[in-house]
Length: 114
Length: 115
Figure 1 (tube, rainbow over the protein chains, first blue to last red):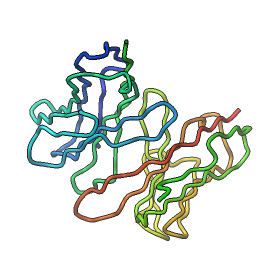
Figure 2 (cartoon, helix red, strand yellow; figure 1 turned 60 degrees about the vertical axis):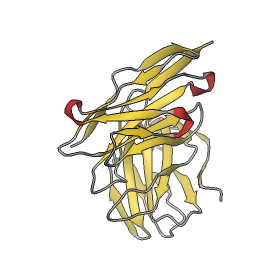
Figure 3 (cartoon, chains in turn purple, cyan; figure 1 turned 180 degrees about the vertical axis):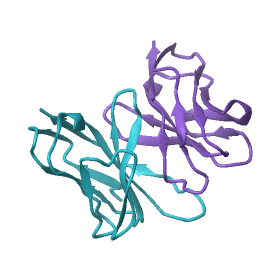
Figure 4 (tube, helix red, strand yellow; figure 1 turned 90 degrees about the vertical axis):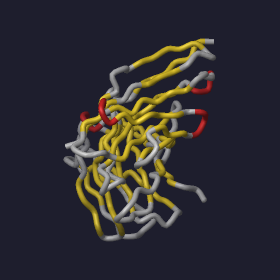
């Protein structure tokens, strides 16, 4: 069975600082990988996804993520955080033959200091 | 397009009561699913449907029933609510293909409290 671990439950960064959110997965083959963002009281919005090919994936709102097969990781990065990035971030995986069957990590709550 | 809509936004139930959480989408998506979100556990799949008349269980189906009589609607039923079902419930939908992924669109959620 697939699983996802997000080791950091909370992260606080200063506005303008860089950000990296960690995600590790367990799956027998290369899965489909996703990052979602959830603003307070809202549903989930897809930031970016990886299926195959280039291991550095660009998403919306200036986010990017890098797939590292050797480390089973798919970390999310942003070079300069804005106050509006404060939200909860979820990493998710799906089998590469059933892309709708998402398994989510526990989430990382990002707080941004002015 | 309204996207994925869920009603109600908030609900308080007493133990043993029943209720139905509504989910509708207007994007003609074949695939619909229900998740529950609990602190520190992310979202967990309850039930899903790949088309009208077809449903299946996800990771945490106990205590919940679903049916899919139309493409647009996918209600989630709690037959006898328990405090352990206190959670935020999200409905999602996407196109269903056999060969590649289509983005899932999530509704705004229903916050359910069972006393």
